[in-house]
Length: 206
Image (cartoon, rainbow, N blue to C red; front, side, top):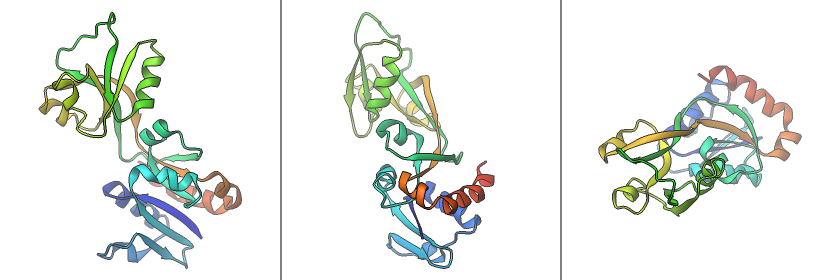
């Protein structure tokens, strides 16, 4: 039995369709209910719905053999897992954004608001730029508007939210997409099953 942690929401639904098409269906997952665990013994597969940011924890700790997590989560929390495939879905990018017309004054410490503290610190460390990280958990766009920060580091999909708040992306840090990850022990002991899944999923990666 292969246990797979799927991220709740639209991304998880897309990922499940990829597994279904690859020959690992679980019809009960389409039922309208609040169950979190779905199993198809014949296909040898069990799916869990978990919060997207928790997928890597389930996989790292061995509660799931496989999972699908965004590259942003993998970079920020660096879980001890194998990254097997870039699924090329859930595409967006991590960017630095600021108020329109912002110019960085390098004589001052840059105030950076973000949910992604480690990614921001690593980005500016490589540039030898002094920063003051302000960790926020939501509505990051408010920080420069209310002068809490000079810039933000956040995920940008379409840029619409930035534009509507008179902000603009000034620099791309890294492209983001969903990745298939594996628990290291599972990959060792269930290697043939996991490699078989990867082989069937790979042609579906756009």
